[in-house]
Amino acid sequence: MKYLIIGAGGTGGVVGFHMAQAGKDVTLIARDAHLESIQQKGLTLQTMWDENTKTIPVKASDMQHYKDRPDVILVCVKGYSLDGIYEFICRIAKPQTIVIPILNIYGTGAKMQEKLPGMLVTDGCIYVSANIKEPGVILQHGKILRIFFGVRQKEEKCQLLEQIQKDFRDSAIDGILSEQIQRDALEKFSYVSPIGAAGLYLNATAGDFQKEGKARELFCTMIREIVALAMAMGFPFEKDMVSVNLQILSNLPPEATTSMQRDVMAHRPSEVDGLVYEVVRMAHRYQVPVPAYEKVAQKLQGEIMCEKNSHTEGNVEIKREKNNRIHCR
Image (tube, rainbow, N blue to C red; front, side):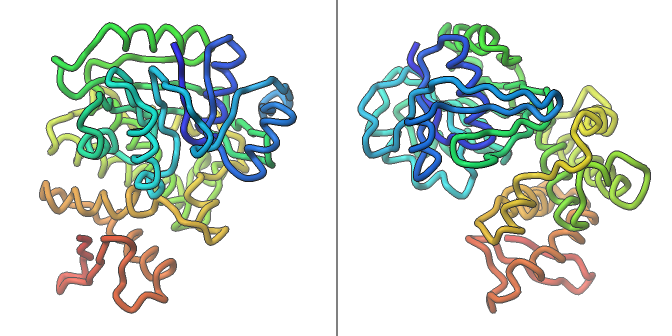
């Protein structure tokens, strides 16, 4: 099968490297110096835990020059970049093409399906910690590399999804075709949202969360608020997500940070809307108290968007209510 990965950063770069190394027909969509380096020198993956470095040839293109017709499209861009890829997907996709978003933000698949009604868009999520170290070089922080994907409606399931799972596993990726993808995506969200939000709120690294203290306490509190939200949404977790997420965290190097932290610190667009403010919106919708998220959202809104008189980021508006809670809409 022919795979296209849109986004060659920490997520797409790692997945593309492993699939290409396994001999799968995969092409990365990249841009600027990163694209030029991959095309000229290959893609390099450095693994932090064993200080190993390997470079392999990987097909890469930008959206303008990609002319193929992929069977599977893996979407690995940040949530704020989605609007810029729909026209491209419509141009290159076949009616049978399957689109698998593996973003941090919960609910992305359903939102993309509305924009791409003529094809199957699954839900999905990935467990990986990596970033672009320099053009053409991806630094992977921890060993975990796991992709959950699946359809929201059972009648949408098709045999091709099982082949995708096999291709992932052939590529040293723990691919899991989920029967309950909305719950599994929320489980991932219960890690990536609290770690990103708490890390940004406290300017903390993985090492701060790995030991007892203020950072770890906030991280665990925010996980519990996601657990309560998932219960209200009808997707109760079957695991102790605090323990699960602390175990994931324990495998990271102490200096590791989240992509949202790095984006905000570099004054780049970030996923703070989907990872923090969206939790407050969902909590209000399902009438679930999330005081830790409200506290974090209020501080981040003040620090990141203070220059905006309307107190907005995108379509998010945050107001103080009489009971000192914040309201995001």
